[in-house]
Image (cartoon, rainbow, N blue to C red):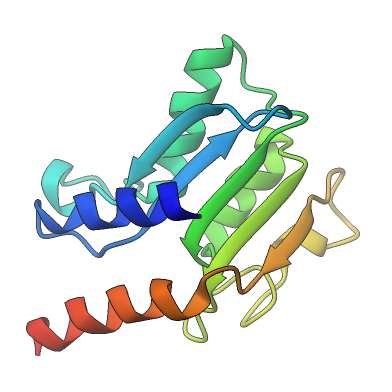
Amino acid sequence: MRLALAEASAALASGDVPIGAVVLDAAGAVLGAGHNVRERDGDPTGHAEVVALRAAAESRGEWRLSGCTLVVTLEPCTMCAGAAVLSRVDRVVFGAYDDKAGAVGSLWDVVRDRRLNHRPEVLAGVLAEESAALLESFFATQR
């Protein structure tokens, strides 16, 4: 999660919401990392999770990320939760809950939907206070 928090801080330089993500292989090695790039790239899909999953897939040479863990500072939205399911990661670890758009237990629970063919394990609340503080600080300057 510390690596994801460092990625989140990198998003600040481009004026993006400070959310960071990393994808780890089964041995704990980083396969991909990313932070929000929506503002920088003008890309509505430029969420930290999608950036990290794309980098991990490129690193691995395939889209299936079985055995991997997606670590992200904020609970994934529906798009990112769907990407986690479709990439076949084994687990999703996140920091702060997102009561407004979270799709890993808060507002929706995409990753545990029994109608889907893959359901990653979830570990929530890891370094939640630090993740939330980074977001709160960012949004305080936006008001």
